[in-house]
Image 1 (cartoon, helix red, strand yellow):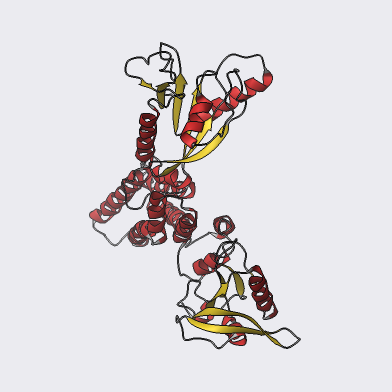
Image 2 (cartoon, helix red, strand yellow):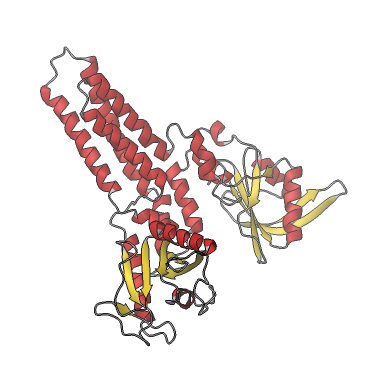
Length: 435
């Protein structure tokens, strides 16, 4: 990275710490001229050395002391963004933060946009697009499993897989170009066969990568378990029990739940959204009918369905991927082989919670060190693989070469190496302001 590239960009600033009452607030500043701005606030400390400084600013009515802060200076390109950067560890009073922000604006900096620090890091080659998405996921991680997955992606686990495929594609394309450019050079026939075999091998690897059951994506976004059943079988009571709070209204009157009620819980270390749905039955009430329609929509979208019933005979499951649960064993015994619970006295609910936790773990268990985590990744690999498979069916070397180039471009868009301008806003817009 050249110094001129690393120094490009108007200075930006933002808090890197969250809002609310705290002891310390970290203000980040990055961009060309950051050194001059810091020098006008205080003596610049040695690079990557934390030192206490009195921050001073000439506000037009004499020099005032803004705060006594811990200051760190990071000269580019060896910084997070690749630009000259510094951090001010301030006392977290709102008056202090506002005064420092006003001083930074007066000295030529501007407030950062969401994700702008990480976008600059991407633009200066400090990380690729997959790593940037991993950082976004790391910020949002709620559980240990999500943290591990996001950290691996931020550290480049997924990037290394795709970059390895890209290098192999480059070699394949070079060999294919040789077959196109030197058709009369009596190249050994095994050269073309090697190209075809390698293309086939790459396509097979990508197919295995895609065949992961969506576990990485499920872990990143969390799971959805829908609770369904006839009216008054205890769906809302079960939801409240699992949520440890009164999230849904419980009543003996049928049809109380008209719309879906969603509650976020942790099961097996995985974030799960439990959805309490309207009771499934025939009805002439248009509002209740709409609730039932929405219930069936949630059933189709759910990762798993908990189908409650309170009769002596088990009903037909709402979907193929369903757990049948008898909900009133204190009144009617559960049929053989069916999990029975009582939402009134808690009988069997601990067993049900364990069953749900095991299912949540199974749906998100990783079988690879670098799983797919976003629909964008899946679509990119599917496009790359489709181009590879198409190249195997091409009768002419020139047409096969064009398919290989299409595969290269599709793979490059995943890491941000080619054709990503239309992706940047949507990717970095997910970040908080100070990242």
